[in-house]
Length: 318
Ligand code: ATP
Ligand code: MG
Image (tube, rainbow, N blue to C red):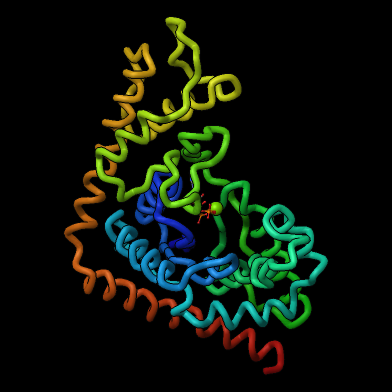
């Protein structure tokens, strides 16, 4: 059975985008793959963070992952499998500053700012370690992470050529374009978990129904009042198009919706219908049960990654 690996960073309360674009497809992949799913808390340290908030967000995300039905996978918190941090340092001795300087995300997020953390610069090396420790054959990623996985491949190839064949060089695959949920208030931007906590354009997985209703009601549309105003047109009508995409991704139909009011009412109902069972399972979960699922997963991760790390150390002369 092929191995599949995905990590989600606890940088904010998870959003509807995280569910439709990540958690739901992750749950579906469990049928065909041996899945390793992690909370990448180390990645959350690359930008300014609050320790207490990180603890809360990590616990919340662990519980949401179980509530989303990922308990047929090996679940783990990245920092609790110390092989990730250890391999990162060893791979920093393989990756080059030239390579990391070319990373588009670093150029956009932090380069040229003196307060930028070193870890933001080396983030792609941590990501390479996350991947290479599990020797997956393929890594499915969206476009924004493609360059980072290419780097992981380059580092693996260089390591193998320099120190001997240790790593499986994974292939990058692009999964069929999943739902890309845009911000309700700024529909040309992706709905992002790290938006300010009270940002009205961001639907959180634990938002109660009245909050969902309020946020959808305030969603940006446009001033089109034509009989065919409710139609998809990403360029000219990004807000309406996003609402239609959300409606479809939540399993509802846009048929017979002719006004923005009707569209928003349908989106509200569809989103609540998706979130309600998830929130119910979340509420019913015993925190001790969640902790046990992760502890077992972390133990399994330690067992799976130990031989890889041992091979790396030996090959490098440690
Ligand atoms: P940040 O803004 O801090 O990067 P994020 O919400 O984008 O946070 P990530 O940890 O980067 O979260 O992404 C976790 C997973 O959720 C990834 O698989 C990503 O593709 C998916 N995802 C995040 N936001 C969306 C979205 N708006 N639509 C679809 N998928 C999304
Ligand atoms: Mg992101």
